[in-house]
Image (cartoon, rainbow over all chains, first blue to last red):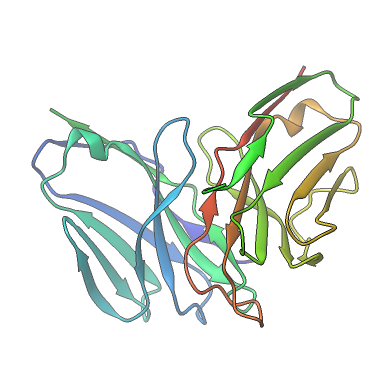
Length: 111
Length: 118
């Protein structure tokens, strides 16, 4: 059973703060990891991907990967109310053919 | 079209009825996926097509669910004898996969078909 676990939240942070979202996965052979953002009533959209241990930065977003601990996180700096959404962690399985999603963490950024 | 198109956007049906949900993927995307998402949950994998064939249908919950992609483009998800527990948003996604099936990038999702079974 391939599992991806996330705290469902809601995670509430004030505007301008750093939001930290966490994800653990069970499949030790996974090589790539994705973060999708889903606004209420909308479909998921990819915001970050990471393949190597360490940090990957893209604007206000930083993905962090620790394969030994089977842990991936997403940091959002200078959080904005427009960042309020559900963030889904996704891990490929079946030789990378498809994604297993976590349950998502709902983030609320308060002005 | 520019994105993944799903129809209908909303479908209300009665318990026991038959339902078809349609997905038109991004042109040129060989891989097509169906997921199901219930309120407050992440997307749950149902079935994956590489070209015309179902490469993995292990996520289909039971034999009331069936999907086809006869020409390798448009796909239809078919649900027989609908039950109230089938109520969810059904998401279709497409991807540009390698010949061996491995994803080379992101999944592009449609806006979903919201199914309500009364």
